[in-house]
Structure formats: C-alpha cells, structure tokens
Length: 146
Image 1 (cartoon, rainbow, N blue to C red):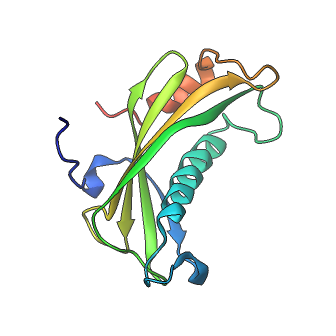
Image 2 (image 1 turned 120 degrees about the vertical axis):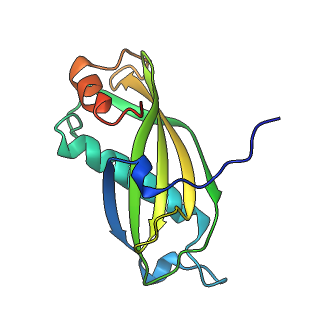
C-alpha cells in the first residue's frame, strides 16, 4: 500500500507559470473541471522547455511524449481564480523525466492539486524512444529536486 499523497507548499518549486482561469473552465459543479488541470501541467512544462530553447514545436527532432499522468485534488479552484503552476523534476532518467506539478490558487501557499507528469523522449521521425539530448538534460537539471 502506498502512502497518502500530501499537498506541497510553494517552496517545493523553483519554477512557476501563472495561468488565468477562464469562464469555460468551470463545470456544472462550479469549479474548474478535472481535465483542465492536465492542461495546466502541459502548459507549464512545455512553456518551460520552449522558454529555455530546448523545444521547438515544429522543428525539434526529439520530443517528450506523455506516457503517464495523474492528479490528486485537495481544494477547489474556480473562475476567476489565478493559478500558479509549480514544476519540479523528481526523476531524470536516460530517456524519461518525471515531473511533480503543484497547482496553487491565487496566493495560497499550499497546493490545491498535486500532479505527476511523465515524458518519454522519442525521435520524432521514428517514434522510438531515445536518449534525452544533452542540451535538454542540462535545462531539465535546473529543476531537479535535490
């Protein structure tokens, strides 16, 4: 049996992406629908890679594909809340990387949701798993949790 997942604090992350919620993010229950959290994860991680020059959506020969993701929810977020998405790497392998993603509502110090997001790097032309390129590894190493 695994231990119960606990919420993290902002201090657990060194990189953040701020995302404004949208009216259509809310579901019929009045809070951000669960699928939107995975959009938060994808946006924060890929923006980090793009901003650091190691992902070009149209031209990169090697790309990270999502092979596993999950989310544990602790408290609701709703429009018009502002979301701060913290990212850290918990495992950096030969061809894969595991991110931990904390989703924070407005200025709250404890996350509203905690995600796991795994990329496996593949050669875009063959679709086969490949070693993470050295430049990508250098950038990812910046946010590995020690």
